[in-house]
Length: 118
Image 1: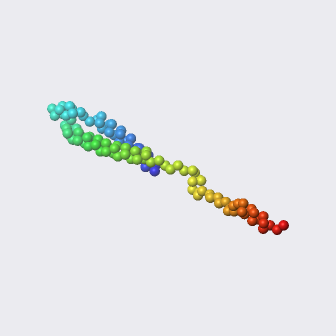
Image 2: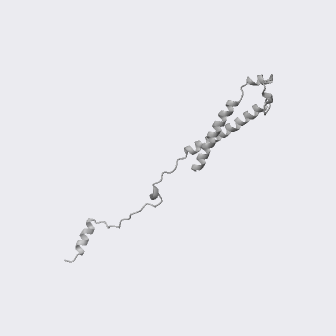
Image 3: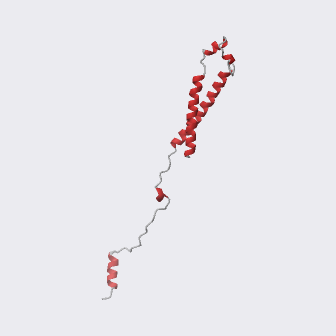
């Protein structure tokens, strides 16, 4: 269970760093107008609009991964392990039974006294 929790934390942190990086790399809305008039972005690897689509789709995928890992961490955060008493938790509790003692009433005392030979 600890391995799964650690894996989710690592994926969560990597997704967060990826989202931050991709958001900082993306151009704003005003940068598209400059690219239309020959801003030099058309000679890039993805073309003038290809990089925007690729970066926005990658950001959306990383945001979904971040959301899912957030839900997973929330689930693990609410699960509390059962407190154990250590070695004594596995052993059943000992039951002590006392021997049955007959009750001594006034009638029993008188009848016992009359039965004893003198």
